[in-house]
Length: 350
Image 1: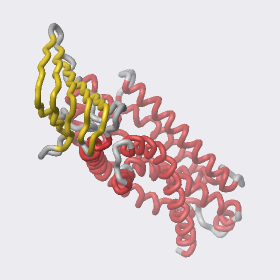
Image 2: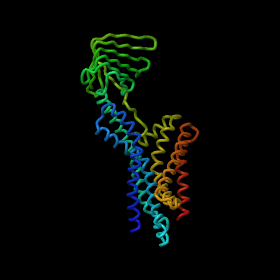
Image 3: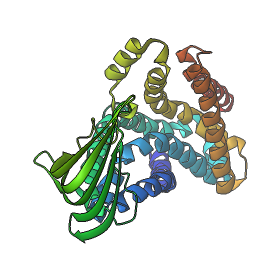
Image 4: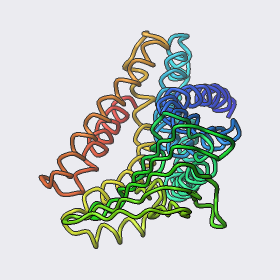
């Protein structure tokens, strides 16, 4: 137990460092994309912080297996460099006993990954969409600038010549293309933009014209006062597969017919990434011995190489499934191959 506590302590600390570092790296792309969207509409720092918290479950599903493999390679690689593994094996400990702390940690991470993948990620993704929609609805009307095309609302293009006050504009041009068969163009001398009782953006326009363009005709209507609500069809950001639970994904996959591949791929990802933790628990300790005396740098490079190869293979098989050239169960092929290699290496070292 003294040996296990010693290894577990170093393994746990290394895992925390790895997962924090990987989360920061993978989060950068999402942060840049969201910051461009939310800073453009005047979102506050609290809004940004809350959004960053909500994207963590999507990132953790990927980073937990990666951090486990890297932490095992770094920890056992250090033990190998200091000849501690040699001493432990010379004292009569089997390799499976030396690797037992990894199994303890992987069992905890398996349960955590399943909880995140099956429950926390759909819930946080749904909340994330609602939060971004709320910020867009409440703050976007206040971020319209004169002479700049405003396209935050899907299906609308808004241009104003002058901003006379908070929410008050002059020289207003609005293009409503939500319905391709009957597009509308509204031009007004002035107007006020505010939120109605349902928190939907609404224009109170004065002295203008509405042009309604159909396939075979066009209509022009002059008005002195016109109340124009931007009734968005559904949410600004549509619902994604990451928000659906496994039963919802399966029902959609069963009802979509030929277009069901994307839903089956999402189902297999939800299950295969947590299962990857157990495969890496076998692969990591055995691979650390194969790395020899390359040290922590060598272990880090090997870990990244393993995940690069795995992810490329996963993308390859998923694309074949999307193209209809393979059955959707082929999404498990990279996992099966990695598990087979892990078992083979582990049995050779034990």
